[in-house]
Length: 79
Image (tube, rainbow, N blue to C red):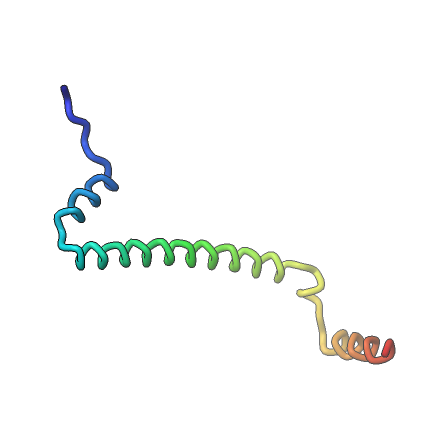
């Protein structure tokens, strides 16, 4: 029978199995770090997209000091 080549996860498992327990735990912490970093990077991309969308809104582009003053005055008048 022909042996299929191992995939990366299988290679990691095989090599990590040969390590002492302390080093296996270190490797596991590193894998957890990589997963957390991937999640953080994905979240940063989503925040960047949201920022671009927000800045593209018409009201975000044309706001002046006079607009802000008028809005504050309107809010205060409603109190």
